[in-house]
Length: 74
Image 1 (cartoon, one colour):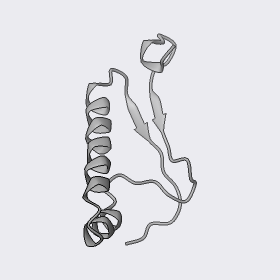
Image 2 (cartoon, rainbow, N blue to C red):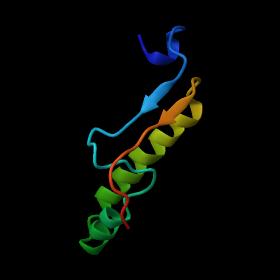
Image 3 (cartoon, helix red, strand yellow):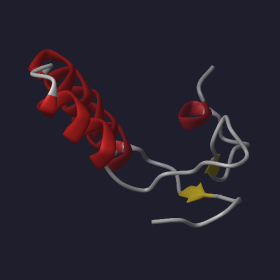
Image 4 (cartoon, rainbow, N blue to C red):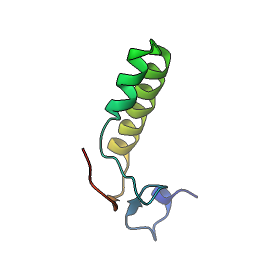
């Protein structure tokens, strides 16, 4: 059973698998690296996965809460 279909689940918490990293945006360093090395297939795959995840979030019917921790850096 998914959380979305479970009436006892009131909201879903999103967190990172790694305690020191939580991203709310695009990995610009990776995109730049792939572009510099001509790895356009990796860019396409990354952006497709990102777009699919955004569509999933937009269509989700329960509240989503993002929880992050760690160090903020540039």
